[in-house]
Image 1 (tube, rainbow, N blue to C red):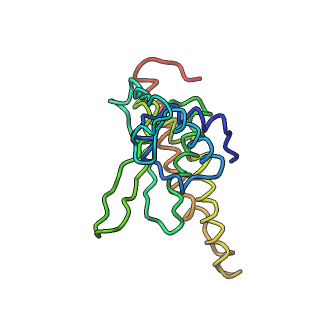
Image 2: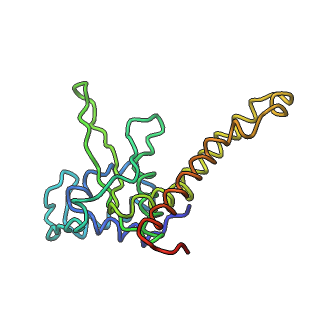
Image 3: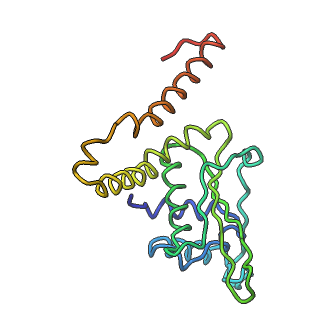
Length: 198
């Protein structure tokens, strides 16, 4: 998914000074680095979080709903590909594009060994009443493609005979059951409140 530079600028402008500086610039894409540098410059922030003397630092308030927010997804740092920050940023853009308010929070993980750099876990927070729609959007736009790739790898690993003998119900029964249960829970909630389904 192509990230809109305007979306990046809006996102960095929405972060507090602390959250902005917790991002690892080296993990960002080139476009994200430019937006990040521009925001830090406008606030007069140095890399250490102090005022660099070029202008007043400003603090953006956290959203009102953050106290009751839930985590829609999280991206753990420390993987070999070191893509946690850009993947979290992409997920944030996906939700905001879908009209779901969200807040990306970086949590510092102190290293166990002296001399190592701290790592960060990125949590994408959403209002509690939008947790399930957010999960659905993220599945459709991001995570389902990863699941599809895993299925393809699995099928490619099978011999012709093994592939021919696959029972689709054994493979897909769990997914069908999950969809049936979610659909049933939705209609039961409507019925319990006397609301007609769409």
